[in-house]
Image 1: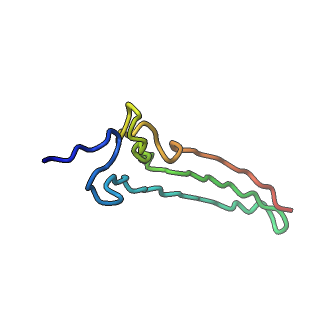
Image 2 (image 1 turned 180 degrees about the horizontal axis):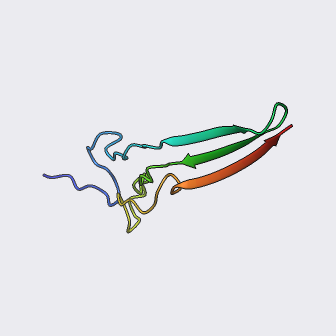
Length: 90
């Protein structure tokens, strides 16, 4: 006689059978100092977060009675962000 599994159970599957994609996030900062005279200088800075703009997908849905079970519906990290800074040194 065959045993029937209850709905929404893993049955004989092992633990951690769903796998998530990895994260690749690279940041970059560039700065340049421009001397004006002996006491004054200007500094320009550019910072880029996730500069290659790599998509890092989120975890799959883990709730079994959800219609999106084991589907990835979002991202883990933000898209590329760039900020600039200008600083006067005296």
